[in-house]
Amino acid sequence: MNTDIPVQLVVAIGTVVAALITGMIALVNLTLSKEQKISEFRQAWIDGLRDDLSKYFSALRFLTDAAFASSFYSASHAETVFPRTPTQIAELRVVVVETLSRIRLRLNPQETDHVELLRLLEVVQAKCRAIGPTNLDTAEAARALDVAAEFARPVLKSEWKRVKKGEPAFTLLRIWLIPALLVLSAGFATLIVFGEFR
Image (cartoon, rainbow, N blue to C red; front, side):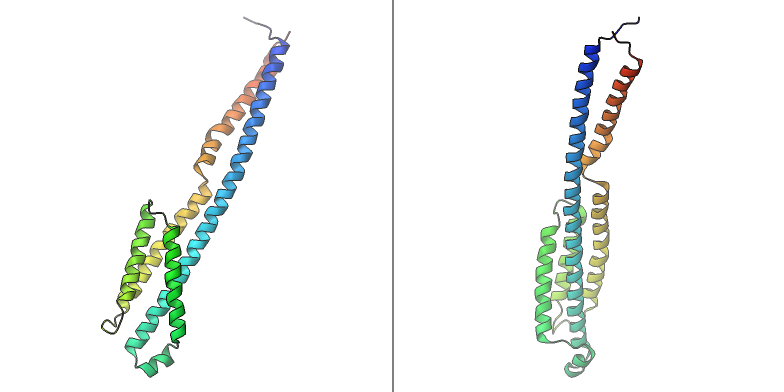
């Protein structure tokens, strides 16, 4: 059965389709700009966490090495082998406290790998605090530092993968809205090309 389509109906459908396409394009642009901003924030978060972890681990490594030098060598020889001042030690302790506080605030207690990293950092703190006149063994603290540092790498990598993958809203948009836009446009184009008008 061959029926003619009124031109006014085609114009009305065209207007609705054009409005839908315009709205979808605006939604895509809005989602893209929001996605880009969130990705920038996530990247800044990753960079900040990496920087804090680096400062934390290096400060603790220095303090552990200083404690080792003090325990292994005589006081006068330790200063020659591993020179440091009480001011340096005090400044590094402040760095450790500040960076650990920032790391704790950055990590999400709802994510398993973040919780595990926090636990490993607590182990490092405990091992480093245990070093003193009655406990001169720094090997355990050094091992705990290495374990925590190694565990931090995949945490940072998984966050970077999340940035590359994109936010869930953008992924949903990419999967459903853009194909719907293409189908709608193709359907209207088919109507125009193959339809008979009166």
